[in-house]
Length: 83
Image (cartoon, rainbow, N blue to C red):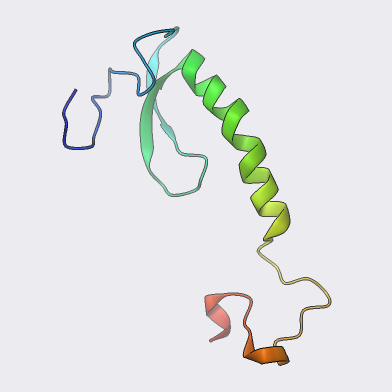
Protein backbone atom coordinates (compact mmCIF):
# COMPACT_ATOMS: atom_id res chain seq x y z
CA UNK A 1 0.00 0.00 0.00
CA UNK A 2 1.24 3.49 -0.86
CA UNK A 3 1.44 5.62 2.29
CA UNK A 4 0.60 8.87 0.45
CA UNK A 5 -3.06 8.53 1.40
CA UNK A 6 -4.17 6.64 -1.68
CA UNK A 7 -4.79 2.93 -1.86
CA UNK A 8 -3.89 0.57 -4.63
CA UNK A 9 -6.93 -0.37 -6.70
CA UNK A 10 -6.38 -4.06 -6.04
CA UNK A 11 -6.18 -3.61 -2.23
CA UNK A 12 -9.35 -3.45 -0.16
CA UNK A 13 -9.40 -0.38 2.08
CA UNK A 14 -10.80 -2.50 4.93
CA UNK A 15 -8.80 -5.65 4.20
CA UNK A 16 -7.18 -8.00 3.92
CA UNK A 17 -8.92 -9.65 6.89
CA UNK A 18 -12.47 -10.68 6.04
CA UNK A 19 -12.29 -9.85 2.35
CA UNK A 20 -14.56 -11.61 -0.13
CA UNK A 21 -15.31 -10.86 -3.74
CA UNK A 22 -13.72 -8.58 -6.29
CA UNK A 23 -12.05 -5.32 -5.22
CA UNK A 24 -13.62 -2.35 -7.02
CA UNK A 25 -13.27 1.42 -6.55
CA UNK A 26 -16.68 2.41 -5.18
CA UNK A 27 -17.94 5.99 -4.86
CA UNK A 28 -18.11 7.31 -1.30
CA UNK A 29 -21.71 7.52 -0.06
CA UNK A 30 -21.05 11.05 1.21
CA UNK A 31 -21.29 12.48 -2.28
CA UNK A 32 -17.72 13.78 -2.18
CA UNK A 33 -16.92 12.19 -5.53
CA UNK A 34 -14.04 10.24 -3.98
CA UNK A 35 -13.63 6.56 -4.85
CA UNK A 36 -12.23 3.94 -2.51
CA UNK A 37 -11.25 0.34 -3.26
CA UNK A 38 -13.23 -2.22 -1.30
CA UNK A 39 -14.04 -5.86 -1.79
CA UNK A 40 -17.71 -6.72 -2.25
CA UNK A 41 -18.09 -7.91 1.34
CA UNK A 42 -16.56 -4.83 2.94
CA UNK A 43 -18.48 -2.50 0.62
CA UNK A 44 -21.75 -4.10 1.71
CA UNK A 45 -20.73 -3.60 5.34
CA UNK A 46 -19.82 0.03 4.59
CA UNK A 47 -23.24 0.65 3.01
CA UNK A 48 -25.06 -0.99 5.94
CA UNK A 49 -23.06 1.11 8.42
CA UNK A 50 -22.98 4.50 6.64
CA UNK A 51 -26.19 4.73 4.56
CA UNK A 52 -28.48 5.13 7.60
CA UNK A 53 -26.30 8.05 8.77
CA UNK A 54 -26.43 9.68 5.32
CA UNK A 55 -30.22 9.21 5.19
CA UNK A 56 -30.57 10.79 8.65
CA UNK A 57 -28.46 13.80 7.64
CA UNK A 58 -30.53 14.26 4.47
CA UNK A 59 -33.75 14.15 6.51
CA UNK A 60 -32.48 16.74 8.99
CA UNK A 61 -30.89 19.00 6.38
CA UNK A 62 -32.91 18.74 3.16
CA UNK A 63 -31.81 20.49 -0.05
CA UNK A 64 -35.04 22.50 -0.10
CA UNK A 65 -35.97 24.95 2.63
CA UNK A 66 -38.93 23.91 4.81
CA UNK A 67 -42.25 25.69 4.24
CA UNK A 68 -41.90 27.74 7.44
CA UNK A 69 -38.37 28.98 6.66
CA UNK A 70 -38.26 32.80 6.61
CA UNK A 71 -35.09 34.22 5.02
CA UNK A 72 -35.77 37.64 6.55
CA UNK A 73 -35.47 36.24 10.07
CA UNK A 74 -31.97 37.04 11.35
CA UNK A 75 -30.70 37.41 7.78
CA UNK A 76 -30.31 33.67 7.32
CA UNK A 77 -30.04 31.89 4.00
CA UNK A 78 -30.82 28.25 3.20
CA UNK A 79 -27.99 27.70 0.72
CA UNK A 80 -25.11 29.54 -0.93
CA UNK A 81 -27.23 30.39 -4.01
CA UNK A 82 -29.30 32.76 -1.85
CA UNK A 83 -26.37 35.14 -1.33
